[in-house]
Image (cartoon, rainbow, N blue to C red; front, top):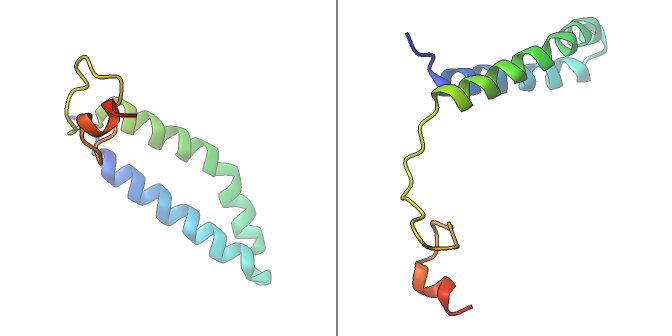
Length: 79
């Protein structure tokens, strides 16, 4: 069963946001320190999940040298 890459990104983002909030409050500093210890593991898990199960929905590059999706190939050819 494949992992959902967006769920891992959302979970780790909320986790790190909560870590930043807990870091600002003096009484919850110890909880933030414990969260800091687990954060590298979660970040590696998120990166692995995105690289393993993520899908790219953009166009193929083909013979073009530029891969920007916000500009057309003709605009890049003139530069």
